[in-house]
Length: 172
Image 1 (cartoon, helix red, strand yellow):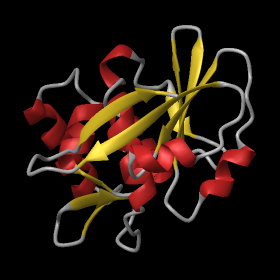
Image 2: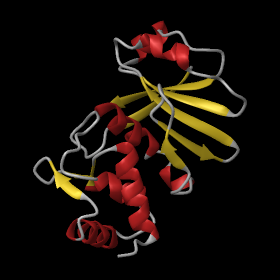
Image 3: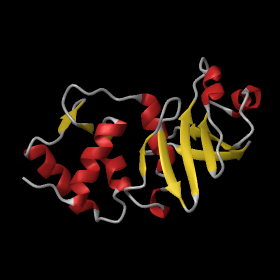
Image 4: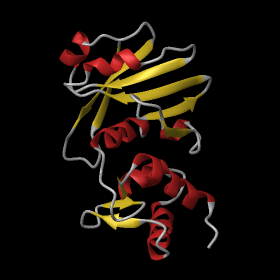
């Protein structure tokens, strides 16, 4: 079975970012109607190109995958930009970053830093036209965090009853 472009994208995203709920995949394929996305996902599951895991809450490459919280948070940040970038312009990034995407003439890298990982900012490599989106637990943590001399934006996630957290951006 030859895969169509959207099917390739879904398989690629699940391979790179790990398991995702259907709402996240729907948002990544924002330009397709929800019913079409669900039909594509159903076909991929039926032909065993992807699997459902964790009580059918997540789609994954296979049933042995586990959700990676840091990558899940990085994708939530990516979703804030998804309608302004090409669906093929984002991919997994080099450590310590999770996701890299291109918007205009700039490269954005999303890095999720937890309380015990302050040292990871020492591994960020500033470059011209590169912007770091640094996801932190809270702004108090961000104020104590050392960042290299580069363009960066701090990001916090505020979890509510909604499907996705509220994403807040703060200048560094």
